[in-house]
Amino acid sequence: MDAIEKFIEKIINFTEGVLSLLLLLMVLNVSFNVIMRYFFHNSSVAMQELEWHFFATIILLGISVSLKEEAHVRVDFLFERFSDRVQAAINIFGTFFFLLPLALLITAGSFTFVHDSWLIGEISENPGGLPYRWLIKGMIPLSFSFLVLSATGYILRNIRRFRRVDIKAGMREAGMQEIDK
View 1: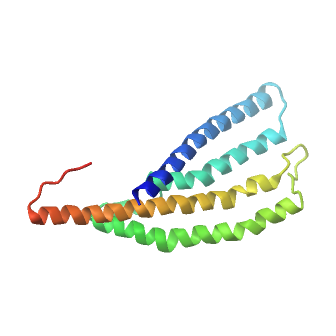
View 2: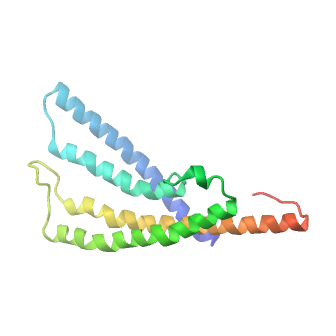
View 3: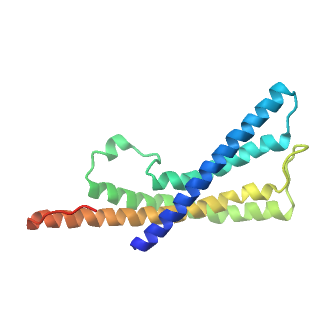
């Protein structure tokens, strides 16, 4: 179980690095667009559309990274008052019964959306816009599949956390010394 969790974490860490690069590219793209528009009175529709493609990719894949980093939305003022064991149980329950079904539903439902876009050769409706609209739409099933992977790692981490609390409690009851890794 630890090997699977570490493998998932490596994939998410790699994606986090890629997202950092995409964010830098997005900032450069926006800066280029601003300079072109205000100093040279010229702009590119394709470059403006590329901004929201970068933004969409960063947000969609960033959901999985935020789950790994525990930076997702929850009611922390209540959650932090619970014991480690209860927190782990809430994380497992919420991820398994709420996050995973929704991510799987969106993943399954979005394939037709992307496939239809690909079949008709959908392009930007704006003159000079980007072709291959299906490519950015493809980020939806990809990112939610990635979220399923991240949620699996999150569940495994919280199962380990839940068990570690059990082991530590048992050691305390037995009068044994705890060794933290």
